[in-house]
Image 1 (cartoon, rainbow, N blue to C red):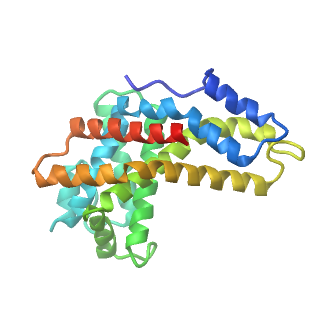
Image 2 (cartoon, rainbow, N blue to C red):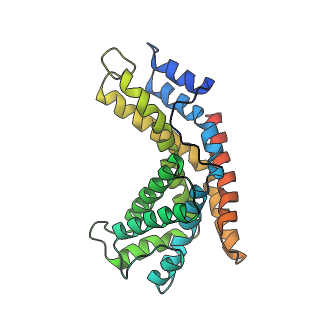
Length: 257
């Protein structure tokens, strides 16, 4: 369950409307971005069925608290993320990817495109949020990195982390399909006539996804705070339940928009 490879453009009314828009003489990049987001609604609602994505969310909720402990390396090892002492940010990202790959192999899951996109979204989000929380990124010391990760466990910061993840994932889901179709429509006189038009489209799509995922920030922060205030363990079951509610909140918001 949750391992269907997203190999072709879905033959649904919403996706066909997106393709039809691409052939319109009066198409605006705003129209295309909104139609694309609307068409991705059902894909988002199905994300909680993918065990790899749920495992990723579980790790995202546990890594910041691991960084706040006295022994970061040992805490990460307990999560199955095998980093050396005083790891660089790139080494943490690689260890995270290895952890997900091992999870897929150990649980005998089929490697899905959705799971792969979620893995890359998580890594991109970790890199981006640590950069925001650190004075520097590429020359950051191990303490800078640990501090940057640990700040994500502070009250109110988990929602920021999770929104970043869902924003990136939503964009990847949309582009997975649109990047196959858009090149056919980039030329003078076409829907997207220049590199500037394509850049405007990308910016509109990113903004649309970011604003649509904002809806679950309060829920994510409340869930995170309540879970730890009750000394509950965040396991796969809790991560799956969280993902189900969060992804549906985002899908509903995309529908409204």
